[in-house]
Structure formats: C-alpha cells, structure tokens
Length: 326
Image 1 (tube, one colour):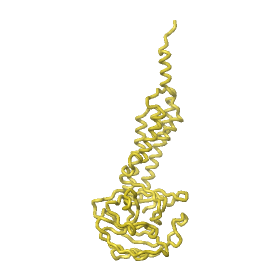
Image 2 (spheres, helix red, strand yellow):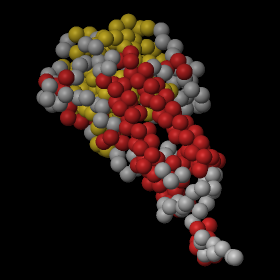
Image 3 (cartoon, helix red, strand yellow):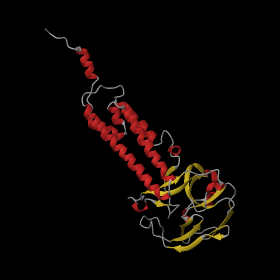
Image 4 (cartoon, one colour):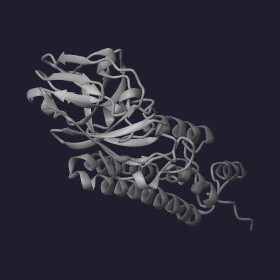
C-alpha cells in the first residue's frame, strides 16, 4: 500500500524555496559591517536592534561623562567608551557567527532576509551614526570633539590634535562664567557655521593693551620671561626665529609664540558688555580679535579641555600628546 506523502511535490518545492542555510561567515561579515545586522540575518531582528542601540547609547553615555568629571579622568572615560564600543562590536559579531552555526539549514526565510535590505540598513544606520542624518553637534550635548587643522594655537594645540571640549557653558552666569586665560570654542564672527578655538584674554569691561611683545590687561603686565620650548620642533611646527614667552592669566600660566622681526601694531581696546577678546597662542600667525573684532559671549559654545588623540599631518601618531590637559 502506497503512503501518500505528508507534503505535496509543490508544497515541498515551496518549502525548499523558503528555506536557506545560515552561513556563519556571512553572518559574521554582516555583523562586522554593522553591529546587530548578523542577528537580523539569523532571524533575530529585535536582538540585532537591541545590540545596535546598546552600542550607541552605552558608549555615548560614557563619552558624555568624560567632560563631567575631573579633568584628569577625561581620558579614562574616553578609553572606557572606546573599549565598551569595541567589546560590544566583537561580542555581537561572535554571537552572530555562533547563532548561524547552530541554525544551520533549519531556517525559514523571513521577508527581510534580502540582500538589498541588508545594504539599506548598512547605509541608513551608518549615515545616522556618522551624523549625516542628525547633526552630531546636536547629539553630543556636553562632550564636543574637534580636530585642529591650523597652527594658530601652537604651541599648546598643534595641527592634527583631536581636542575634547566641554559644552556646558552657563549663559545665565555673569560673563557666562568665563575666565581670562581659558581656551574656548566659539562661532567665527565672519561665518558662524565655522567653529574656532582661541584663548580668552579679556572679558567685558577689561582694557587690553598690546605693545610689541607685551600684553597688558587692566594695566597689569601679563607677559612673563622668555622661556625655552621645544615640543613640536621635529614636526616642523616651530618656525625659525620663533621665541616663546610665559603669560599669566586668571586660570594659570601658559606659553605663547612670537616670530622675531615681525612688524606689529600696538593695540588699545576696551571690551564691551556682552563680548570677549580672544587671541591665538601663536601670536604672529593667528587671525583673532586683533583682525576681526570681539566675540559675542553668546557665540562661545565650549571650553577646550584635553587632547585625546593626535596625528602628525606629516604622518605618525603623537603618543606623547594623548591626554594632554589644556
């Protein structure tokens, strides 16, 4: 007696078309392209979305905490954020590979198991993550990363330095809580879409005088003795004829550069209410308040805190600058 098959030939063919083996290496590759995508490939979309969300939210919180705590802990939280991000990334990839291995051929294709769906997710979510869809400046909240591309702040910030800034500016406080000598990030008065970093020299009401190489604030000389400074020499950041001087401020002592033989005009200005006067530390190679005027306090967006990474434009990582407090 012939037994009737449980599935008809057409049903068996349809079932075969809807089934496909999960390949571990392909699941691993998808996960490496985008955290959580390997889980989507394996039929676990909720797990994939959860892993992707955790990889962003958890590392983002640690990233924000970097500027909330003490300055000397900033680099620790940044490293912790990097380690957490890398750890989640690796764990998700390994999990996708193991999961696909367990499933093997016993997998029924879902409507989202299409190559074009994977590509679309990679493109859209990477655009989101890179800030092309939502501005990263709006997402960072407290911690604001910047990359220095000019030499106007040499010797304290070099071209190729990646600087972390604290966006917690108290706009309700007197003079926004700024102190003379602080390094601040602000909207460039000539193009407010561009952010500059300079040093605050004067706050509202201050009288600023520049006489040759000497700086006076409210009649008090702030320029100190000539000092020896060699950092950046091998990078070619220190020009021939450069001289370094210490300079005093409310927030401490720092070093500024001048180039011997440069013609300079004396300056005598009073900072009006609602503005601050800023200068670059590389005095003879900086466009600042001497050239385009005062900066509105409301346009100050952050305080530069620390160099968290540094790359020599001529090649190589400047390991010794990582963690340098500003």
